Image (cartoon, rainbow, N blue to C red; front, top):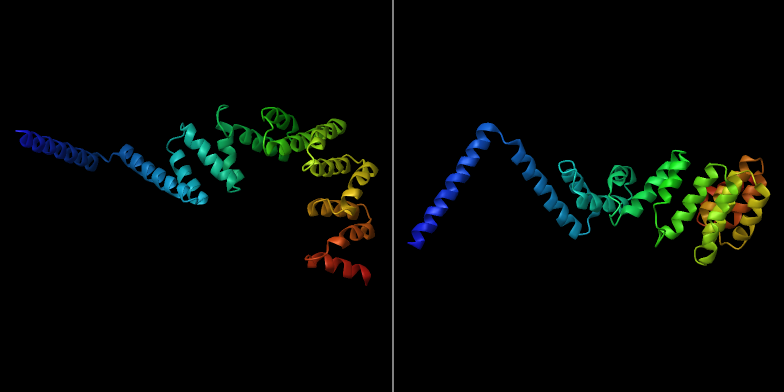
Length: 250
């Protein structure tokens, strides 16, 4: 009796499946096709994510999000993967839609703030930075980004004050001094900027990028000899700079 019931149930299931397949064949169920495609993309993305293949995982998740735009959990994971992979342009639309309770909300606000600074919308940048808590790596990025937004609004004294919080973090204080000097160069406070920069450059504490920026600033202001003198100690492993110095000595 039980065996007959099981066979009957199986037959009914097969009949329903066949009917469903026939309906899809006759009417072309776009909804089922989209669901199947989305499910396959999600599973493939999960597998890539578990295998630490962030590029492939993000691509698959983006394909799923195109069909399931209200999935906040998937949006957050996709955003994090794109940011970790340096795909900021693709991450930007997702950053705008992340809910405030998201674990990646602070990163999203920071990314949007940096995008606003790039677009010279400094007021918007400050507003977004106010939504960043400033813990972890953001404890470095937030004051620097805030300082540059204030500098863009010609509020130089406030910009320099925003960097003072880094003075209490010895490993990060050099970044505050570097960006403070660059902001003063931007504001035309050249003597003050040089007073900040020279000790960092002479002690080799400054980053190569800052040294190059300072040398470029000297060059733009007709001080090519001084610019090359600044770069000379950093020549090792940089043939392009060596060529510049060789041209100077001819």
